[in-house]
Image (cartoon, rainbow, N blue to C red):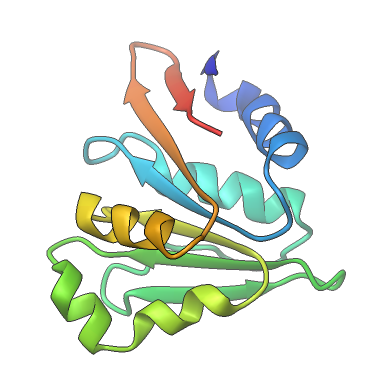
Length: 139
């Protein structure tokens, strides 16, 4: 599925994901720097009823959010973190938690591993255009 949306139209991307993805999913966000990976995560958090600031976990590697309705959202920034390091840190076990796991900069090796052990993994490719972004979703 391909959706072209401006920032004001981002809710239609979120609505598509809400209607397509199961309650527990791992979403790999792909795109250049400043493509809108964190912006999409912020829009998803808003839709899930999460209040407070949603920021990129660049230095902490992971941010965890929970809404009043119990809809959990986990946000990872794995920039410069190799698959082996991720596994050694024990972060793999975090994917057992219920909710959506938004993964920025996840490696192909990690994605293949997760799919191989049975996780539902979706990729959202984000391409920034003049006044909009293109979201390619392989759900």
